[in-house]
Length: 140
Image (cartoon, rainbow, N blue to C red; front, side):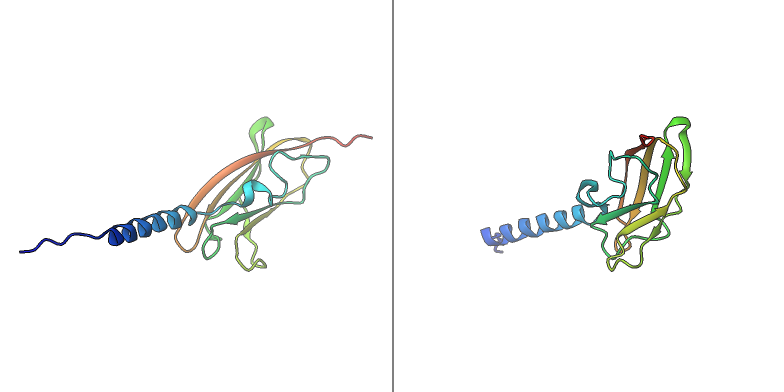
C-alpha cells in the first residue's frame, strides 16, 4: 500500500485557509468603530452642555446589530445613578444597521460612563465596553 504524502502546496493551502478562517472569526464581532472616533459624545470628552443622545457606530457587525440584545447604559459616576437603563435602539436609517442610539434627558454637570453591549445578527458576535465623558458647568 502506498502512503499519501502532502505536498508543500497542499500544506501552504491548508495553512492559508486556516489563517483566513481565524481572521474572519476575529473580525466578525462588533467593535466600537475607530476606537470611538465616531462615538457621540466622544470617549473622554469634556462638554459644557448636556448631549441630547449617545450614538455609537460599530464595525464588524455582520448583518447589523441585534436590536433586541444590543444596549447602551449611561451612568452618572457620583452616586452611581443610572441615567438610562439601556433603552437604546438600532438606527434603522443607517443601511448597515450598525449604529446604536439612546436619547438622554438633560444631564447635570458631572462624570458619566457610557457602557454598551453589542451583538451582531449574523453570528451572535458579542462585544462590550465602556468609556467616560464629563459635563462641566459653562463659564459665565
